[in-house]
Image (cartoon, rainbow, N blue to C red; front, side, top):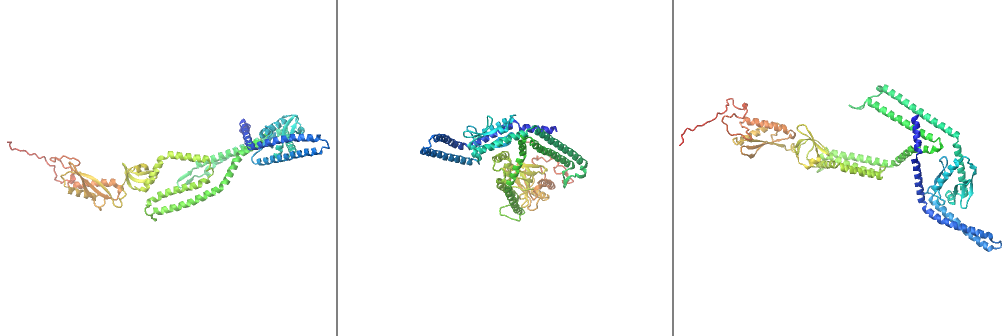
Length: 625
């Protein structure tokens, strides 16, 4: 109950705060300035017409006085004076017609200012100014005088009368002129001045009488009782919602194992029982607060509508929610034709993209051959075409989106474009490099390549990066821009068709015949797994150095991804074959003194009776001459 009363007091304080009053006053002033701007030209014309009316009025009084002063025998002078009076009457009719035409032209663009009664209801509107008082000033002064009359405890409503002045009809009470009704006021209402005066006086009397009755003590106590009834009913309903919420929570807690089951898809659990229980608790709590908020929203306008002075607040509270909802519904209704256009564009583009995908899928499967267009270009090209088609679709849809022509929407679009440009320069560079690499075709998935100092098999290539797996099962990610700016060695490009040439260098002394070495190296290559027999391995003598000859063994293989094992087997076979043929591998440098040294060939390759040679010492006994 305390919470409800605090909310009610807060709403009342907000509704009657000086800011709200100031805002209302500022809106009225702005409204007044707009009306003055619209009626500026009319007021200029009105001044001229009023000046002519004053002149004619004085002239009429003068002529009427002269007419009454004439004797009955002065017929000629009477006729002349009556003729002048008729001319004045004709000008008066013409003047009234001009004013009425001007007012009719202003009815669509100008609005009157309301005169409020004691109950804050609108009694009538004021359109015209009198003297220096604007319509807004007149309406505010009349409302203030009505409030003063209501505050008069000795008010006699029947004493409100209508008095004819020189150019107006005044509604007065005692010595107080409540309002004056001019010819312009009557023209705005399409009535005569007396008719409008009678009508407004009756409205004022009824408003004061109704206010006196509505604000009597009996009425006030009845309204207070109604307010208490609304608050008690609201409290009981909130109490029932709280009790129902707790009972429902207890019921779910005790029986959740019976009807709550985990939601799974294949082996993945989307929601466990505990998660479902927490979701239900969250939904119930939100529903509880929404119901309480709805009750408060219904109860507060209902409470405000009980008292006459706060009935306007009820309308304001109702419009706070209904106006946005109404605007949403109207906007959705107006958006339906555009939504239909968007759906048509989307579905047409969707099936067109499917057709394009089918074409590129046929190219990738090499069922459709286009001269100069490689099969591995198909899906990357499809991705580019799909992106361009979706961008084109967005361009077609954009004018149909709500708010697309607003300056805020355009400003946000420009801001996001600038952020994307500044923050994605390196990403864009990698994407462009990825596109270039795709159409350069330097490698494909599964190829053994070398990028700088990094060698490995290509396991993935995207628009941004390329990933390699090294022979040590290390995954290395390389930006495409780095690949484009460097050299790429592809070991697998010709391996399957022509074979990849692997080579290794062996350095041996000059004392070994080169023919024996060539034969030993070729035999070792032919013994190696994954080495092709045809084309046959070959040996090149690449250099004659100071202490040895460099022999290069070249072999062909189709297994570009098995270079490490091929090199290892090849080197093993070279060692074995050289040992079998008695060729010592003494590189890079070996001293030529052999006496007393055991051969470097392994023991199992040497004869059983092998002995290390002894030192040879030769003594020259011949005497010196």
